[in-house]
Amino acid sequence: MFKALILTMAMAILTTGCSTMKESLTLGIGTGLATGAVTGSSLSKDSGKGALKGALIGGAISGIASYFIHKGLNKRDQKTRRETLFNLDKFGVDYPKNYSSGNNPGLSMPVVESQWVDTQVQGKKLVEGHRVWMISEEPQWIPNQQLKKEKK
Image 1: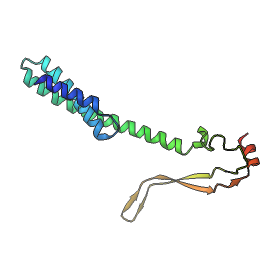
Image 2 (image 1 turned 90 degrees about the vertical axis):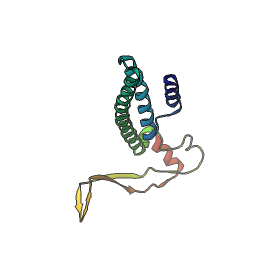
Image 3 (image 1 turned 60 degrees about the horizontal axis):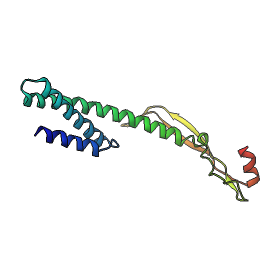
Image 4 (image 1 turned 90 degrees about the horizontal axis):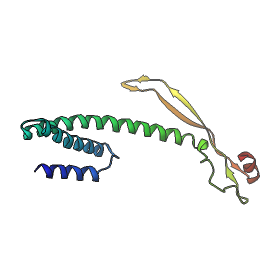
């Protein structure tokens, strides 16, 4: 029975990824259950009760840890995506490679401004402080000669 539990947990760990909250919690709780069961069984005189107690404690601790770790990683990834998306020109993504070859015109980058809106109460609604992005200058067609000068 105990070997079947460990084998089942090992299969669950190997076949799940950590891409969603559900999968992160499943992996964390499963790992905690297995580790807690083994530890509880080896430390207790009554290995059955010790394994159950260890599994419950291990599952709870690792489930909580998995939740906060996943939440932190999501927040970090979201910040990185946002910083990258709004600064594509810093990463050399503003023009496709070899775009300036030939006589084709190009597009200039739009000028984007941001404005902070403070937290405010609007009737029965509380609107938290947030940033609003506005395109102040639309992209313009640039003849190929001017595009080459702009890239230098």
